[in-house]
Image (cartoon, rainbow, N blue to C red; front, top):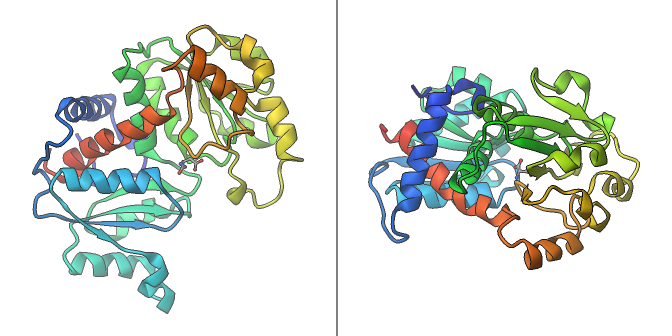
Length: 308
Ligand code: ASP
């Protein structure tokens, strides 16, 4: 049911996704201090070639909770700097006794290549602007865990779709559960050819916002914009940010999601966050997404690397 490595969500059947979600729910129900043994004796290398806080730390916590050994391997001090190619580096890690690698890398397409070159399994912790499968899994988990019915749920994803690996994984996470996806961004960040079949797109946020049961915000990925596609962040924010002016447009009971890091003042204003905290506590799911990341990553590691 599970492929050897996980680097995109379209590799997974809906049944496999369901299995991950129910395993994550199992771990979430367990007592906080309880630990497990499905990775006992296994050496898992964590190697992140782009910045990360949530994903890296939650993978590390997940490995430890499952009884595995964490080996942090930093590209800054690695043989890459001495000219070794990445395939040789990974094979060296395997020769040293690594059972699996959790990888974040900036080049889209790299993991597909890697999967054909190395023998040990690897799990993506985010690949350039290609995919970030465990993020999308934890997003679906977070909604289901709250009792949200995904079928016919209207999800609006607003932001830098063009450069978002999270969006590209969400494209394969929501439709299998019959949720309706609408993508919203300025035209330069939402080219027509990127929009998958069955997914809608819009360029004017105010027209679609009132329909969203879930509004999923994405950061403008400034580090990936080779040329400056946006005239200014202030203009982006005025047109696509969730600010006080847009509060009346939001559906009653709307849930707000974001993969983090959140740029307060760009994709969402401080005033809106304060308003939600005071009037609709529990509707901003950002921290819950982070917390659930540990359980979902435990489930993924268990099912992919721990023998299920
Ligand atoms: N944390 C997410 C990622 O690694 C989203 C972001 O960086 O904006 O893709």
